[in-house]
Image 1: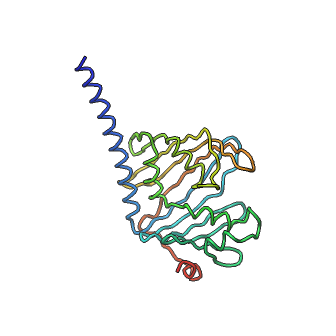
Image 2: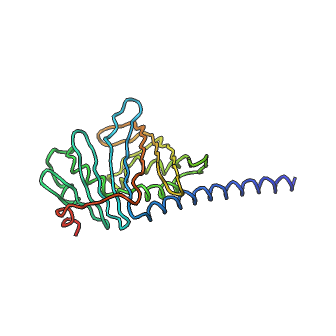
Image 3: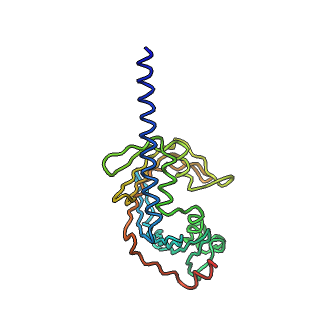
Length: 235
């Protein structure tokens, strides 16, 4: 009996070590991407059950954290530049800080600049996002160059809330999801994030089934040019 117990304990410990190893491998691959001089990416979103996904988001980032985004929302493309916790957003009236864009009433609640201002508050570049997601996965399994795992309930909720907190946070139920990370040459090259659940707001309940795929490209060769007016807003 004691021998069987010891064997069982050894198996559990081996599983824990393996899970820790795979998470460390992905974190290392994410760090290698973050340490690159620069890289670009494109994220696309699909919604299940007939839902409409948002347009693609394309981004470029430098090692110092300077990040340029181009987000397609409906018929509009919103540009934003982020650095050192600050953000500048291009609007119909020129470049504005995120705080200024958030107060812009042009177009009401669907004003792309206002929507972008809310999004950039919690934005994370792919390398940082992967490192964060790894800590929200129950267990990460490896199959070739692909690592996959199921999100914890709290991890899935966080993705469905888009970073909402306090009185602005929606109520989320039935949250679940999963993550897949592709690694090539020891560096993250693709990420797939799936989340689903019911989000309840004052305007009503919404069933969400969202898959976001991010593909990394041009590592080390990406060119980033920040407009002078955007630089002024970031200073």
